[in-house]
Image 1 (tube, rainbow, N blue to C red):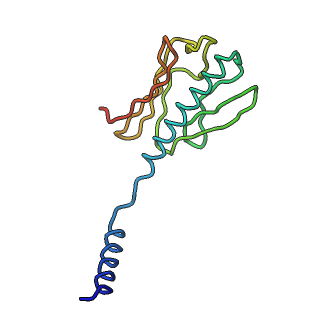
Image 2: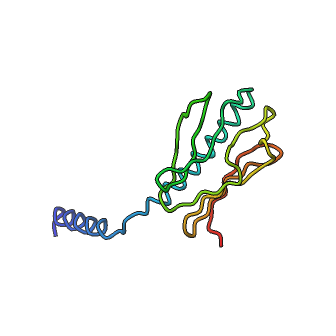
Image 3: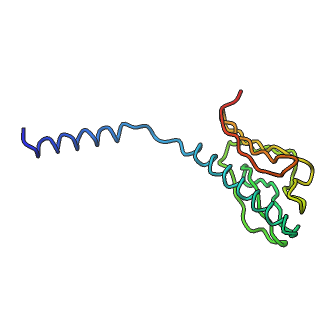
Length: 139
């Protein structure tokens, strides 16, 4: 066997192996990206509210059978982010904003993102207003 034959054989085997992999499930990636973006936006709202601007907040919305949230600043909607279809978003409050000392306006809350067996929680700690993400599989 020559070097060229070995290289061609390895190339053919690698192409076959690449084609045999199953399709990657992008839904989990989108849910994780949504949770991280939401936590980041909640931290942004907290930071701006601590500076005394109470006109910045988040509220939960629904569009075309998908749930999400909208970031509102000074009376204008800055951005809206939505989950993939079939993923549930649960929160006991309809609006997210903070006091000037950094605490959440009603103590604390937990936002749940539920997709089949995947369960992600974003918790706003009552005393400090910190935002935590808890990911995992729960029953």
